[in-house]
Length: 238
Image 1 (cartoon, rainbow, N blue to C red):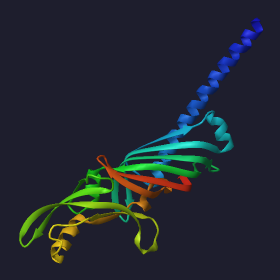
Image 2 (image 1 turned 120 degrees about the vertical axis):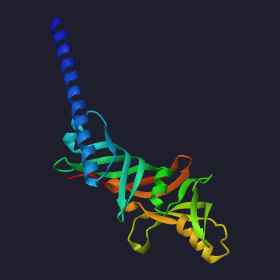
Image 3 (image 1 turned 90 degrees about the horizontal axis):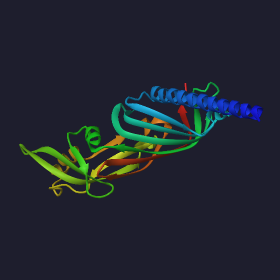
Image 4 (image 1 turned 60 degrees about the horizontal axis):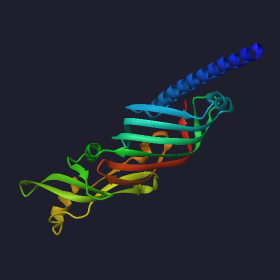
């Protein structure tokens, strides 16, 4: 009986050591992967990675990770020489096959979401207009000051925000804001002057982290919510 107790105690100790080593290795890998993702994309802000599944060391040995979650906060993405800030970006990568040097991997599929606040969308417009919630999904309120006939007038319009294919057949997606109607729209010069302030396009798709593609968007009081997805998505890498 004493021998059996010793065996049990040794087994418990070894098990605890294994769990401890496994969790340490998982935490180290998460930190390294987060740094690589941030460096690979040239991202500002903060990044956090969580590797799911236990034991991690078994997954590492097989070069197959069941699921890797990525959280980015306050990051800036660049497309066409312009930066747009994302308040939040959360993505989940499934069935990740690791590279030979373990510097990254490729996920069979990925899905996620991102949030652009109205303050950041205002900055993205680069027109001096202020954007806010438009009272319904897919709508934004755009307030802008325009100079007409020597006078500066402030107008607010309700605009539709949509996700469109990038022009020129180059692939990718653009976020498009277009006023539903403008004051004095019956006069072409007035409408053109106001729309210069209220209407704009912004390419986001080519700057998305980790090769995620935009698939849809909507708006609410918090901001503009983007839906992301993809297959055979590269996760970090050297």
